[in-house]
Structures are given as C-alpha cells and as structure tokens.
Image (cartoon, rainbow, N blue to C red; front, side, top):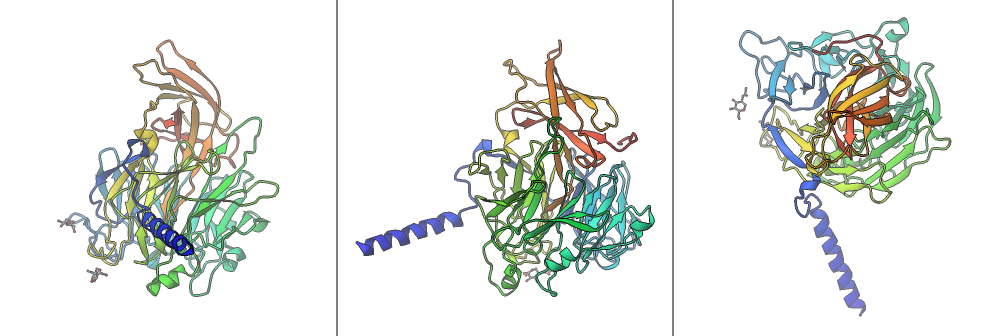
Length: 554
Ligand SMILES: *[C@@H]1O[C@H](CO)[C@@H](O)[C@H](O)[C@H]1NC(C)=O
Ligand SMILES: *[C@@H]1O[C@H](CO)[C@@H](O)[C@H](O)[C@H]1NC(C)=O
C-alpha cells in the first residue's frame, strides 16, 4: 500500500512537471484571451528602449557601437558616429507601419528617459561617450535627436527617471552612481548631484551593483517612492531626506537588474470625497540575487512567481503577496487604459544579461487589480517570438501593446540561441477581442490645454445596431512611459471622477468628468485620455494637462 502511494505520488510529480514545462501553452487559443499580430518583420534595429510621442509615433533605439544593424543611412547622410553608416534609432509609425532613421552621435546603451511636460522626449545617459549626454527629441514631422554632451553631472548608465510635480525630471542611480540629479538644469541646485546611501546599501556586491534601474513612483504626497532589490524608501528629494522606510518585501527575491522583476503604481482613483487616493505599488517577478552568477556558470535557476502589493501612503504599509500563474523574470508590466496590468515578455529561468536567460515565457498574463484576491490573474494567448533581455513593451493609443526587442547579442547575431530580434508585434488585450462595444471619442471640451480640477465634457459615440447603451463608464488618463529593461518609467493611470453621462439628441453621449486636482497626483504633461465602456477603452485623445500653456502637437 505504501509502495503504491509512493508511486502515485511520483506519478503526480511527473504530471506536475510535465504540465509546468508546458506553461507557455494555453490549452487552446481562445479569442477572448487576446491576440498577436506581427506589425513589422524588421525595423532594422533592436527595440531596446521605447517611448511614445504625443503624435503617436514610437521612438526606439539600441546602442551606437553595436555593429552592423539592418538599416543604413542613405548615401551622403551618414553621421560620424562610432558605427559608420548603420542606423541605431528609428521612429516607427504604428498607423502606417513605416520607419524613419534617426541620428544618434553618442552611445545610448542602457539609458533612461521620460516624455517631458512640454511633449519633448528627453533621454539621459548611456555608456561610453554617451554617459553624461542629455538628448532631446521633439514631436514634429522631421525632428531628429539633439544632443547635449555635458547634460548630466554624473555618468548615468542603467539609471531610472521620473517626471516631478514641477515638471522637472529626476534621474536616480546608474552603475556605481549612488546619487540623483535633476534636469533640465535651470537653477544652481540642478547643477549638483545628491547622495543616496539607500542605493549603496541595496547593492549585492561591489562587483555587481545589483540595484540598477531602481523602480521609481511618484507618491501623491509629492515624495518619491524608490524600490531596489527587495527594499523601498520614500524620498523627499527636495531636502534629500528619507522620510519613510518600508518593510522588506518578503521572499528574499531580488527584483532589480540583473534579477529583473518589474513594478507599477496601480491606478490612482480621483475622488472629491477622498482627495488623497491610496497609492499602491505592485512589484512582480525577478529572481534570487545569485541567479546571474549561477547562469554565467551554466545553471539557470527558476524565476520567482511572486508579486507584492504595498499601499505606500498607508499608516502602516505592509506587503500583501500574491502568485502569478507563471514564474517570470524580465517581464514588462504595462498599465492598460482600464488600469489592469499586462505582464508580458521575459523568461522562466536565468537572469537578465547577455544570453543568460532560458525558457522564454510566451504567454502574457492579465492582472485585474480590482478583482477578488486569488482571482485576479488570467493567462493570455501566447506569441511565437521569445522576448528575452532587452525586450520592450509600450501601450499604444489604440489600446494595443507594442512589443519589440530581445537579446541583441553582439553584432546583431541571427544564429545565436535566442537571436537578435528586429521585429515589432502588437498584442491585442482581451478587451479588443471580446464582445463588448468599443466607444470612440469625437470631441473633448475644453479643446485645449486642461487645467487642474477643470470640468471636462467628453463627447463619445457607441456604434450599436442593437441599442446597446454606454455602460460602466470610466474615464482614465494615462501618462506614456519610457520603457527599457522591463521597467516602464513614468507610467501612471489616473481614474477620473465621472460626474455623469447624458445622451444627446443625435444618440451620442456626453461624459462629464473632472481633471485631476493636483500636480502631485498628475504631474504636468501630455496624457492619453480614454473613455471606457464596460471594460473596453476607446482610442486615446492626447490632452496636455497642467503645463500652464498651450501646445500644438504636430
Ligand atoms: C537587412 O536584412 C535583409 C534580410 O536579411 C537583407 O536582405 C538586407 O540586406 C539587410 N539590410 C542591411 C542594411 O543590412
Ligand atoms: C553568433 O552566436 C553564435 C552562438 O553563440 C556563435 O557561435 C557565432 O559565432 C555568433 N556569430 C557572430 C557573427 O558573432
């Protein structure tokens, strides 16, 4: 009898092992679980960094000394960068799927960035001759990179950025940089850097300063939440003072590069009854700190399956842990217009770095942040393309998630185990493949720069043959990210307070909502405004918000 039960147990283990090795396969492709579409077989470069501009173009780049990319400048237009005539940055138009080569003169490898409040993409740092460079990319038809070679006080390689309530951008950390600084540098204090011992304390060793690309989120009180490894603080960056230390995230897992999990600030709900919303940070995946050393020695250990939620402005914040359906490192966490989270890209084993990950995770998972605990995750339909180290993802205005990049290897190696990947794909989240109707925004009043607390009237339409009405209406504002290394910097979703909805005589709808009240809730900038019907978002309308003056987006 004992013998039989052991056999049964062994059988069960084999079954579990067999099932888990198929963790990438949804049992059957169900239309309601999203779909994939190849948008471009090759954009010529590896989409290692990605940002979206207010004209809905994607700007992406890899590194300038990377060898022969698959795209060259036309004769006579070749800039004098280290790599001769090979292009390393392109603008991609998701609507026409066309690309335009852009000119980078200094190295952008493993750099950071943010869309500034006036709609200019500001990119910072990199490696080699690019480590102190600040680069500007304006939103216009023929714009190209402009580079300021003395833009930063310190070299910043693997730093993270966040837009602040005054419109400045803070740049935190970088390899062997245990400090932060601000751009643009308009005051004397901007020309200094500020020490942050937290970054030094959270490193694993001097050899591997294992807190690169720290996770940054702006708290509604204006302070900056910083997460590195498994610890977090709240920083008053004006006075260079740590105002709060959070409990250590349980589990002993490291979440930052090269152990690479990801993090988002869950949607902030605007309410006149509760002017300061709960601000909840959600961190998922990663691996043990020594995973990189093991992987370099040929042992690829399993990634973490855990996530944690922390209300960073609670009286006594505590991590609440959850488990993803699939263990993952290097997953991109992308906030959807609904506020739900897609976890996409990455691997099941190993670490972040050159060829040190195995077992790509092909299925995205959806996380319904408002769902009942234990019932929030859903495994979605898989892609066929592994997206490992240096892959990226970005929300598009049409509600799709753009995905690109993967191991870039040296010299664009197309025969390596996980080859250099030049393609871009779009993932259609379940709200685009389900049965609920999609609303469309036809006008936003006021049709100009929106001020704090301003009342908005959003005219929208729901095309229905069957008399279906606008239902469970939500209005959200999304701040576009700068994505690299599995962290979408500056992502933010604001759920606006909806005062009411009325039907016009023409059968359209007018949704009345209020703009966010303060710059600490919504730093000045260009936001994507969405109306959501029964969980299905419209296409976004871009709104400049809180910037203090009007902008024309070309
Ligand atoms: C890009 O790749 C294609 C297909 O392999 C090849 O035909 C083309 O010559 C490449 N272009 C460049 C500039 O390397
Ligand atoms: C590509 O990677 C493979 C496997 O690592 C290696 O054998 C090959 O030499 C590389 N090719 C180039 C051109 O570097």
